[in-house]
Image 1: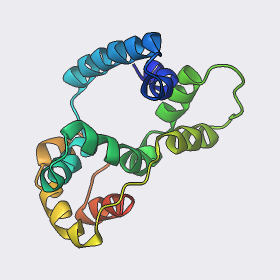
Image 2: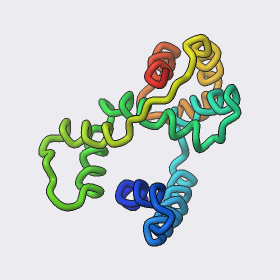
Image 3: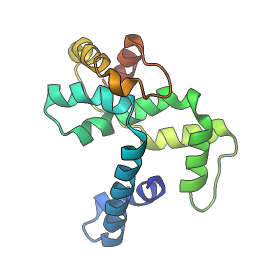
Length: 155
């Protein structure tokens, strides 16, 4: 799913004529859904519930907003997974060699900036920390300070 997403999302979103890329994204969505059904979700989902509730945005959109900051937070706990993602998803010339380079490449690919008012930080942290059933699945323990720092990345 990740390989299909990384290599199809931009043309699928940028061109109405990119039918094969849009079809690949639909299949990738199905594969990703099967994967999270089997593995469960983590801090991205836990912290996105209050973000979506506060701004009345779809859960998928709030997940997209938080994906890069949470993945950067988790990177120290799983650099080998980012390196494997790079090896799998980057086609053609591969310029990254070390786990660190591969991790940074994948994280930079994910990162986006979304404007969220700083005044909403405390309520978002408080609400996100209440979603313990998902936070407990995360690769690294998430404290309120960690959640605050993750939310700050999208301010």
